[in-house]
Length: 100
Image (cartoon, rainbow, N blue to C red; front, side):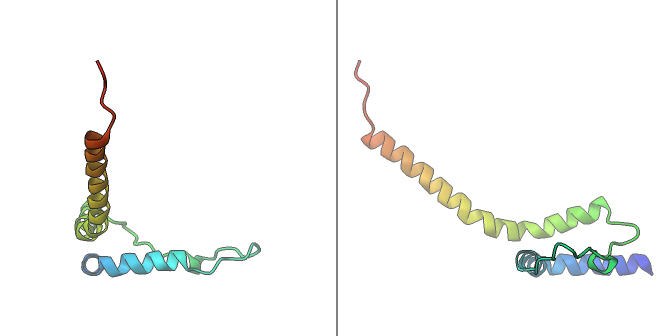
């Protein structure tokens, strides 16, 4: 019973990783700030499974995140590569030549 529920939760996380990532980031960034006098209660803490997640669960979640990470990293890598090639070409074409 508990194992099937955990498997269902892991399957849901794998299928909806992009939306969960975006919603968790927005809730982290736009969450209301606590006042100095307020203390965290047990209801403020996230619920954790009793057995925890196994290494295979973390690996499968990471594997399902790879396409989303590639979508983010690809433009960064392309712009860095283009800038590097441009700087090398400009240096080769218009750089000062050494006199012997």
